[in-house]
Image (tube, rainbow over all chains, first blue to last red; front, side, top):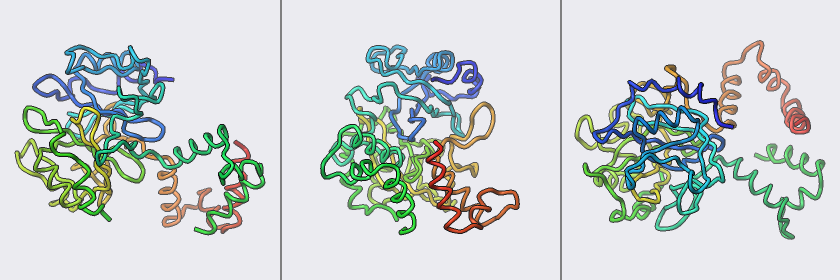
Amino acid sequence: MATAPSDLESAIPFDRIRYNEQGLVPAIAQDYLDGTVLMLAWMNQAALHATLATGEAWYWSRSRSELWHKGETSGHLQKVKSVRYDCDSDAILLTIEQVGDIACHTGERSCFHQIEDAISPPPADTLSQVFQVICDRRDHPRLDSYTNRLLAGGDNAILKKSVRKPLRW
Amino acid sequence: MATAPSDLESAIPFDRIRYNEQGLVPAIAQDYLDGTVLMLAWMNQAALHATLATGEAWYWSRSRSELWHKGETSGHLQKVKSVRYDCDSDAILLTIEQVGDIACHTGERSCFHQIEDAISPPPADTLSQVFQVICDRRDHPRLDSYTNRLLAGGDNAILKKSVRKPLRW
């Protein structure tokens, strides 16, 4: 669920944002749940206004020179949860719910997947990642999986493990 | 501990980064532990090179038109853990350890503390925030604090609570 547009429209004082010579300001889109930085794109005043008015992310496409309703073609819309601006009022931070969990046109979750000439997703909240692994093991059990052994043991085995592990730390 | 510079230097293929007309590329600094977006600043090729060579964040100060070794004056250095670039090679994402836990010149932790005309820190990993509250209660106990009651009860009270809570969910 996106934040009600009426809440968003009051989040940014338009006259305070400092756009660059091209009338643009960089906007970071961050997953609202696990904190992963998904992309950096650009907004002009119209894109910012459309974002606040609709509760979905709009950017300015520099390559196509047009307003860009993110996900309109791919279906990978971004539902905006909060909008912040920085101390110099020349950068914007959106926290979003990424529909389809894909922000990048390459099909990767995040545009920042490139490191050391390789593909590797940027860091997310560790517990969210662990939770995804547990769900994946539940849905696709493996014979050699310790997680599946715990899951098969039921609540008792899981809770004993949850209590014992912190004690060892 | 910063990542060994030798690891970082191979992280970014210099000739692939696309700087803008001013020779700059936006760089996002994200806390490597809890995922908070701390700031957006700009790098030119020299700043990126210095960052990779030293393992500490260097930017290009647009207001002072000079290389800016972040924290050199304030002591709030940024120890770089990883460097990524995006799918268009025109934005950089640093994960960092923020010395002093203050990235903003205003004294706030993050530059993105402005929302709805008020001051409010951007979202961080919830468990990291809970952990900080627990540490704070431990160090500065309050009479009416439920956390202090649990802490006073010792391992037994804490573990019983840890097990009981998930069962209720």
